[in-house]
Image (cartoon, rainbow, N blue to C red):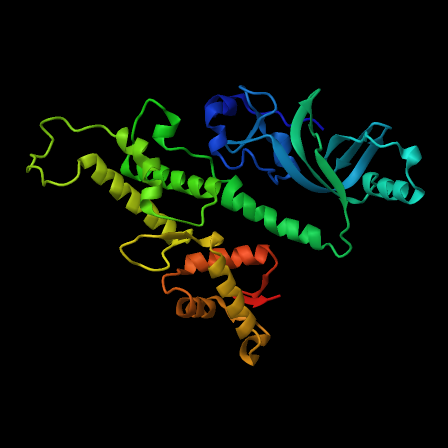
Length: 355
């Protein structure tokens, strides 16, 4: 099936973002779970072949779940069609099948050869060849789903991804779109500062830090701010007039950025004192242990044995036993991380129990 023809007038209106900015979009390096229809209709980049755009998001690899409706197998190549589109993958290995045991050969054949009607999951880059759009599978496998649990979960998750991410256009502030524009509005400046701190926490994997540990990261943002003219400068009051304006701006920007991280639950201060120490929420092992202990103890009580503990109950207990400065947003992040690690499960809306 060939991709549907696009309206030339629509192409003339849409402007492709510069390639140097693609890496700022989190979808660029992710396996995007798009519907097959959208994969077929994505625009191919004018700048780099093999890159496509969905709603201004740059995409080059996808994750697809579908039923096999077509297959073509050769010794070194398998081609399967799932739903309305086919994708290919290399099947040549380094082993010699003649030296393998019969059981191993049967297991390999069962996992790599699929029949019509079987459920298949594929991950890989998108490619357009001879006006045919395909997925060149870097990973593919047959999915065992006798009670359709995998398919139901997929159908519930993908619409959420569309609402929360895919259908929201990728937008950059004016200073990022135009490198010649320095600084930007206060809102854009604060957004960039917050993003810098988030990237630092993600890349360095720190568990705690102090403001002066990250202050220099924001210095370039303040340095690029337009300087006041001599007429706009405030009169100096002598040597005791305080720190320079740039330092005041840096300190203010840092404090506002840290407050946003606290509001989002990414960091918290276990003890509020003059020594400002910020704990990274998801890497605070003591906090994770405290939450597990609370759920383990309280879920044994008859009151919580069946349904589990409500989020607000856990929050109250954490504030009593660990730190009164833990916010609801921080607790939700930790509960989500514990659930992803299969340490706890959510039994119903905002209720959790230990495994």
